[in-house]
Structure formats: structure tokens, C-alpha cells
Length: 357
Image 1 (spheres, rainbow, N blue to C red):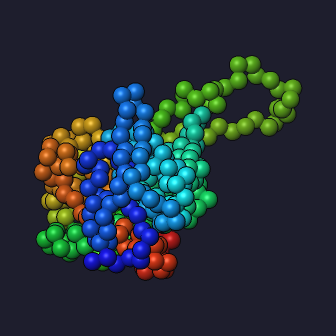
Image 2 (cartoon, helix red, strand yellow; image 1 turned 180 degrees about the horizontal axis):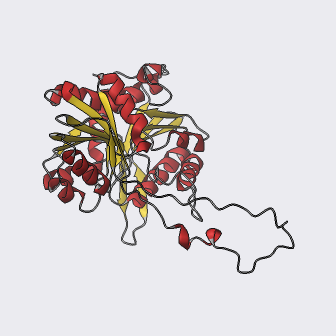
Image 3 (cartoon, rainbow, N blue to C red; image 1 turned 90 degrees about the horizontal axis):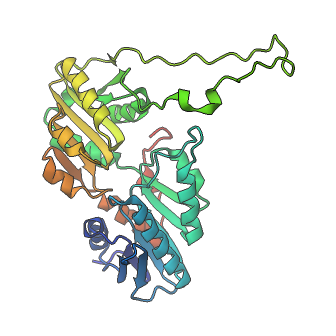
């Protein structure tokens, strides 16, 4: 059944078949057929897009899920968006459940804020609206000069906990680092459960010694600076021994985070929780990137189950590791598309969501 007004076109911008699955689910829920478009790589690895139907005066929604080749994924979307713009589409909304390069949203030494660059490229290509889910940092929305709807996957993950985890009332929500404490607190308060925080685990730290900005001056010059104005040095950080703040003994431990990619920190957290007496360990995350040997590490670890959404296709990883489970979030994406196309309010999709969620 078609739940939308006329003039709606949905394209999937990905040339990889597995990455088009989410677009098919969304179009089925909306009762429309996917738009006809060819997205492919030429022999010289250039991306070519050919739209095979009229989009003049229509609302176009471009669904793009990140494949293994993230850079090709970005180019496919940019070129398709620009093609829709030059074909006189009335509006072009990008649907990126996982925003690529979202971890590179802060300045690190002599690096760059790549998320800002990607946002600028998308706006320049002709994007007029963006739908995404659980941005790594909510401040990324400020990189765009167009409306951004940052949807949440937590209702689906909370529903999974309540329906699929036996005796979840005996669980405790765990943050694998203090940085994840707010997310864990949000889950714990909604489920009326306790919270635990692991402190002191190994961080993805970069050596400050190789950065020239931390190098001492080669010659001590006191002529320009008054001798009494020596700049104090910042005391270097020392990681404390691993501690778990909160009781996990004899409980089900549910680790929550937004992204699970390099699983080393999750595996280490699971081992720590096992040592502290947790008898079952779940990992919940919105985006399951699961790069490299992540499925093998999960299979060999103390983790009992990893639950992620289908913002990123991971069918191959599920074949390699039966512990990986998927929650479908196509329902909320299709409802967001329907509301935007019909000019309805989006506030219903953000009900009960606070500033820290």
C-alpha cells in the first residue's frame, strides 16, 4: 500500500548488491518501487551514474549504506546527488544511516576534520536534507548548512533487550569507558537497571612524542620572555589499573556503544567483566562495521552475543560468526522519508529523546 503522496522517487546509490538491501526494505514499507538508476565502476575505477527515469520536480531520496570501500561509497552518492540536481529534482534528501568518517570529527595534531569536508561536499553536490542515525558526535550536525535529522536506534535495541534476553531484569548496563557512560546511563534509566563503568582500559592513544608542537625549543631564549614567565608543562596522563565501577557479579552484562569496528576494546572489556563475575555478556551497538578479523575475535572471545542494526550490511560477518545478530531499523527510516515527503512534523520520531541521548 502506498502511504505517500505522488512525486516521490527513491534511489539506492550503491553499486554493491548487499548494500542495496536496506533500500529495498524501505521502498517495500512505503509501497513504492525503487527508482531506476545504474551505478557502476568503469574499467579505470571511475564511478558512473545513469538515471533512467525523470526526476524533474520530484522529491528524491538517495539511500546510501557504507560498503567496504567507503571512498567509493561517498563518490557514488555525490555523483548521484549531483545528477539529480542537474536533472531538476525539486528536493534531494540523502539517507545515510551511518555517516562515513564520523570518527574524524575532531582536530588531532596536524590532521584535519574530515567530517566537515564530507559535509561540505554533500551540500555542494546539491543535497537539501540529510537523514542519518546515531552520529558519533551530535555536533557533526553543525557541519551542514542544510537540515539534518539524527535519528536514534536505541528504541529498537531496547526492544531487543526486553524481548530477546531472558531474565534481563538481572542485567547491568556497562560502559566500556567513561566516554560511553552517558549512553549507558540512558539505556539503564529506560530499562530501570543498574550501570557499571570500566575505567583504565587501554585507549587508542597516539604518542605525543612525535608531534613537533610538544618538542622543547632547541635554544633557550629568555630575551623575549620574562624569566618569571616560564610556561608550565601539562602533566602527562597515566592510565590507572583496570577497575569496574559498579557490581556485575552474578549478573548479565550488556555493553552499549554507538560503533563496533575494531573489537579489541570490547573483547578486553568482556574478559574484565568475566573476571568480575558476570555470567553472560552482550554487546549492543548501532553501527556494526566489524572490519578485518572482528568476527573471528568475537567468536573466540567471552562475548556471548553482539547485536547491531542493519545501518551497515554485514551478512558476510554473520556467516563467519553466529554470535552476531541484526536488528532491522528500516521502519524508522521509511517513516522519516514519508513524513518529510508529506510535509509532516518529525517530532514524533524524537519523542522522549533528551539532549544527552
